[in-house]
Amino acid sequence: MANLWQFFGLPDPDGNPPANRRTPATSSPEQPVTLDQRPSPEEPASTVEPEPVIAPPVTGEWRSPPLGWAGPLTPDGEPFHDLGVSRERPVPPPGKALRYIAPDQMKRLPTEAMFKRVLQGDTAIVDLRPLVHMESHQMACRRELKHAADDARVSVFAMDAEDKLLMVPGLNVVVDMEKHTLGLKALI
Image (cartoon, rainbow, N blue to C red; front, side):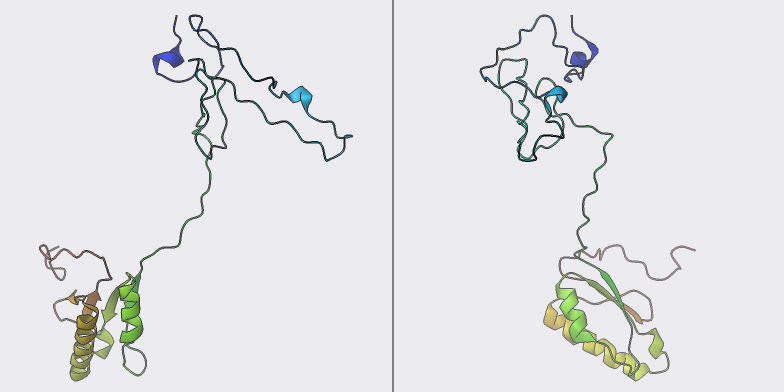
């Protein structure tokens, strides 16, 4: 008679093989390591503990755990995935960033450094609002951005109706040009 674990297709965690299956004979002369066979603390540190033997599966074939498997095994030799154990993996550093760029104290834009980062995948938001009383200087900054963007083969997008907040998408960044609504008028 099958148990609940077999009904769902899972290995029995208690290791009780069903009565209708036969267990294969082991061809290895090694014995499994038990807790009683650990070396005592009085023994020298050079003693090597024997490696535990993986129990054969019930189907009659030897199964080995997946390559690099370091987790626990069921009595059938299957890898056991304990979903209650959480493992912290190192978070890789982000490959792309969103950069906010405004004119410096001399009212210049660092276009060369900005486009180096854009070619690496960063998206740049250029804010020309601090140049509110310098319309001719705003136009010069827009022209400089346009020429640098043409050299880098990327586009410059206006994010507001006055063209004072500009976006330069990074390399391999997709911008939807079909649905664009500027300002808050669409929300009101």
